[in-house]
Amino acid sequence: MTFSKAILASVALSLLSCGESRPPDASSRMLSYDLLMSGVAIDAPIVLSEFSPLPGARPASNNLSGRMTLATDSQSNDFRIIVDELNFADLDRLGMQELPPFSFEFVQDGDILVPMRQGPIGNAHNWWEFVLLPGKVWDEEFDNGFSRVALPFALKERNEDCIHNGLMSFLFTDAGNISNVAFQISSQTCGYLQFEMHGLLRAEYEPDGVEGGAEAVAAVNANRSSRMPQRPIDLLADYFPNADPSEFGSVEEIEQGDMSVFGFIIDGVHYVGGCDTPLGKFPYCNELALPSYSTAKSLVGGLGLMLAEKAYPGTATALIKNYVPECGDDWEGVTVEHALDLVTGHYDSPEPHADEDAAIAGRFFLGEDHATKIDFACNEFPRKSDPGEHWSYQTWAIYLAGTAINNRLKSIEGDQADFYNDLIVARLWGPLGLSQLAMQTRRTNDEVAQPLSGFGLTFVRDDIARLAQFIGVDDGRLRDADPLDRKLFDAIKQRNPDDPGMQAELETIRYNNGFRSFNVAEYIGCDQPIWLVTMSGFGGINIVLMPNATAYYYFSDGNVHRYLHAVRESHRIRPMCRGNA
Image (tube, rainbow, N blue to C red):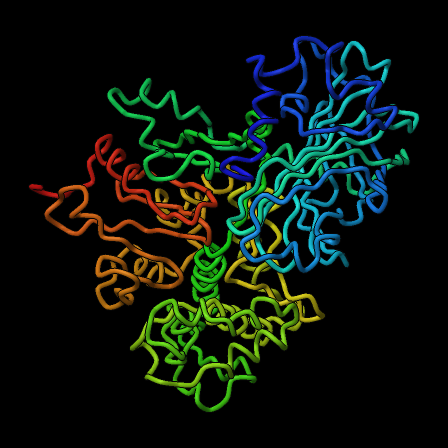
């Protein structure tokens, strides 16, 4: 989870040269009571253990309930660009280095601090939206009766998916006294823009009752109590003799400095790794915000269609032009499933990824309103083949599918209907117990508020483990329900001979209903096809569901998509071949 392969190496080495993972006692804290109260500038990034409780920390003696406001317009901070492949800093460095407005309500339950809004939280800032996650509260010896908070947060790029993860820390009392707030961004999952940012902010705290606080606390506690059991990846060999944990998150495939998090799921246990930064481990890895990028094509587009087809038969074969009036007569015969399969017949280049990579695609991705996006999706590319004949990777085709699903649902249930909230959240994310982050998706910034369906989700790593378990191991079934259309679901598992999907980048890869399937037989020595189901995202995100009831995922930002080391090791632990191989 790097912000550079060599970010501030000299600073990191000097801070970590003592070999200690945390300060030895509270009197030597860098984020001391005196520093937080005085507002003295922090000259350099600090080790992330400063945001963790020290040995001997006590339960919080104060309770935070009310609104906290930060003076982000007059901050004392340091901002340093590390990677800027698109030269954003030259366009608007000042706007990029300013935090968005921060005035949010919080409620405390024991040692947990719960934000009442968990991002991304839209605002008028040119660059960033806050993503807030549950924090930790405790007491320490030298804090003079104040309680101490560590609050994980992230900045998510406006209208995009790049994530920049950080931490805040401050002191407070029941009476409303509050220190300055130290903040630091030290890692990200973003291939084209990476930076370091830290500083102190003036803060105000207004203690008060928080409407809905009990419900927010209950939701966080329910999510945490039902998380999939976790073990460090290093312990894998303790449960599976001769397993090699280093094959998962292998440095031979993904550079350690590019890796955010990774995990392996087997027998209902989530073996976890990653969360490394040049300034130490991110101390709250279960609360690290992760972007979806194009994994949303599978999870929103693909699962959304399967849910809609099960609940409202005929959605998959519904014509795009009947539910998206902006698409004219040359869309005749193109169905929702064609759009989700990326075989609409509308394209410029016959090369699979050329349209997505073309400069004109910026009009779709940068446009924030539905009118701009749907005009581009319907009218930018001519019809060159019949639907179902040519595969062309186009995020706007998935947007078309999502728009058609949403509009069909509204035509049946009324204008208040929303396919993300009413189908995906109500029928899947809620029953699966996903985090509050996953309950939201990026939408157009207008009255339409169309879910984007091709990108825009935000996760924590337990969400990924639960989704992998649901799709890969539980075969798309809940304990007491079968919410997905079986024909469409079987197609992504290569179990529907009438619907194998289209060849994508390689002969061994097929694309169907928003998912890729990858035949790995030749790579693991099997004599019959062995299909993995995969979801991938820009920059180096992959979720790999294997037919031996295991799954592997990683989130990285080095623009590398490799996972055969993990696949081979999973095969060695639990063979995938069928028959005599």
